[in-house]
Length: 482
Ligand SMILES: Cc1cc2nc3c(=O)[nH]c(=O)nc-3n(C[C@H](O)[C@H](O)[C@H](O)COP(=O)(O)OP(=O)(O)OC[C@H]3O[C@@H](n4cnc5c(N)ncnc54)[C@H](O)[C@@H]3O)c2cc1C
Image (cartoon, rainbow, N blue to C red; front, top):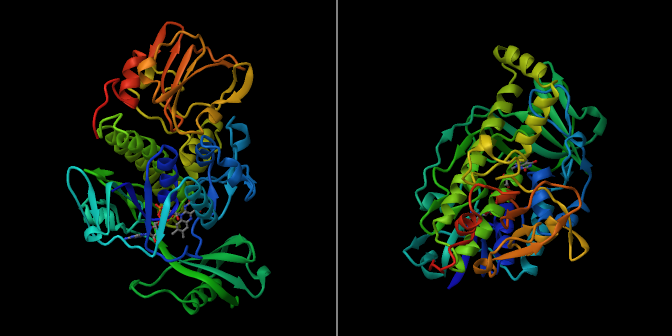
C-alpha cells in the first residue's frame, strides 16, 4: 500500500508530492495526460511563492529562469504598486511559464523518489477507515489527494459541494503570432466595436477578447478569434500559427470541505476564481506547502488526523480571500458604466501608500495569517505569519532561518538557551542560535511550512505554554496511531 496517491501533476500535485517526499512519505502521482500540455496558462510566481520555495532551498532554481518584475498591479489602480519599498525578501514577481514551474517541480519530486505515472486517470475510488482503493484496485493508499484541477473527479466522486458564483464574463484566449507585431500595442487596444488585450510573450502574443459565443461546447478556432479581433478593432490584423486557442471565465467557486475522511483537495480542485492578479499557481503552491507536512506527520503516527482539519480551516480562509479580491478586481475591471464611480473612488484610494501596501499583501498572500490560538489584537505581529528569513549565527557560523527549514522539519529557535523540549526532539530541530539583528525574542517555534506557531519575549509566551503549541502541531509526547 502506498502512503499517498496524489491525482494530478499540475503545480498543486507536484509541489505536494515534493513536500510529502521531503518529509519521508511514499508518494505516487497519477496524471491523466501522457505528456505535459504545451499550452501555458500562467506566467508568474509571486513573492509568497518564492518565499515558500526558499524555505525548501528551491527558490534559486526558479529565480534563474526569468525576469524579476518589481511591481504588481491590482485591478482598478491607475499605476502599478512598487514592491521594492515593502521590505520583502522577494520584492518582485518572477516571470516564469507555468509549464516550466511544473517541469522544475517534477524534476525535484523525482529527485526525492516520487513516482509520477502519466497516462493514468483516476476514474473511481472507495475509502474506508484504513485506506483508499483507486480504480477498483489498481492502487491502494492510506490517503488520496485530488490536485486534479477545476473539474476535479476526486471532488465530484467524494461528493464535496463546490458552491459559488457562475461566470458572468467569458473570454477567448489565443496564443498566436501576428504577421505584423506592430499592428497592435501591448495592453488594451480599443477599437470601434470592442477591445483586444495583447500580452507579449517570447516569439508570440497572448490575445484576449470577450467571448460572444453562448454555446461553449465546441473548441474555439483561430478563425473565430480572428473574426472577433477584426470586428473589435474595425480592421484586419492577421493572426497566424496558433499555439493555443482557449476559453476561460470569471466563475468563482470553493469546495465546502477540503477534506472528506481520507480524501483531500488542493489547488484548483478546491477553488476557482477570476483570472485577475494571476493567482492560481501561487495559491496551489501555498495549499500544498500547508498540507504536505501535516499529512506526513499523520502518516508517521505522530499526530491525530484531526490536524488535517487545520488544513481546511487555514487554507479555506486563505482561498476565500483570493475569491474576494479577484472578484473585486473583476468588478473594477468591468466596462459597465454604472461601476465608473466605484472605479474612480477606488483609484483615489489606491494612491494612498497604506492602501497600496495592503493591496500588495492581499494580492500576493503575504497577508496570510493562521490562527495559532491567541487573540489577534494582542498577538505579536509574527505569530501565525510566515516567519521572516532571519539571519542567524549557529555555532558561530552564519545561516538563515530559511536554510534551517530545508529538511521540512519544525524548528525551535532558542535564543536564550532555556527551552526544554526533549520529548519532541524526534520531530523538531532545537537550534541554539543568536540573531544578527535584535528581534526582542527569546525563542521562536516555526512549523515546517515556515509559519510562526509560538514565540517568547522575555517572560511572555504566545499563544500559551510552549508544550501546548508543540502538542498541537507536532503531537503529544505519547504517540497516537493514524
Ligand atoms: C488562461 C489562464 C491564465 C492563467 N494565468 C495564470 C497566471 O498568470 N498565474 C497563475 O498563478 N495562475 C494562472 N492561471 C491559473 C492556473 O493555471 C491554475 O490555477 C493552476 O494550473 C492550478 O494548478 P492545479 O495543480 O491545481 O491544477 P491544474 O494545473 O489544472 O492540474 C491538474 C492536473 O490534473 C490532471 N487531471 C485532471 N483530472 C485527472 C484525473 N481524473 N486523473 C488524473 N489526472 C487528472 C490534469 O491533466 C492536470 O495535469 C491561469 C489560468 C488560465 C485558464
